[in-house]
Image (cartoon, rainbow, N blue to C red; front, top):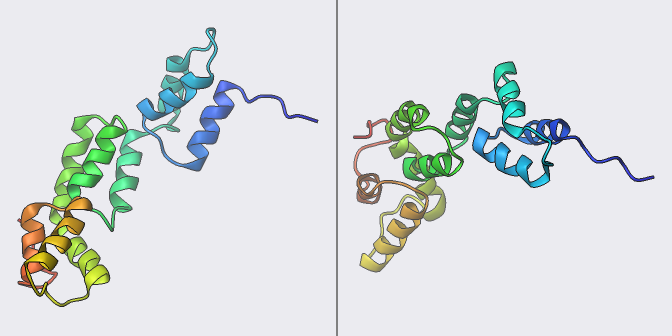
Length: 154
């Protein structure tokens, strides 16, 4: 026997049960299946009021789960999800402070602790770190092999 279709509220709860969403993301997903009589904005307002939909919680989750990426990539991901810039300020600060140790860990895992042997290898490693969203200054410090991981980022 086929299951009855989920209500808009049921769909929204299902999406939020799987992972945190921004208001923009959830609205886009819900509009695909919403009928003309459905008020998606009112439903989302209710979810925000109940604390079921929280962009602050989403930012914290993404920032805490970003052990493999640089600040630029994480912040771009959050912007793409429609997070307000006022929530990104504190997140950007914490990401930039911890970027150097993260970059070193990613680099060590991929290439080992030996510095690049020649310019071509240096360029390859630099492209890899850049694709992970690390800043140019962080990449230079990692490839230079200077001070240890307890050194503060810029």
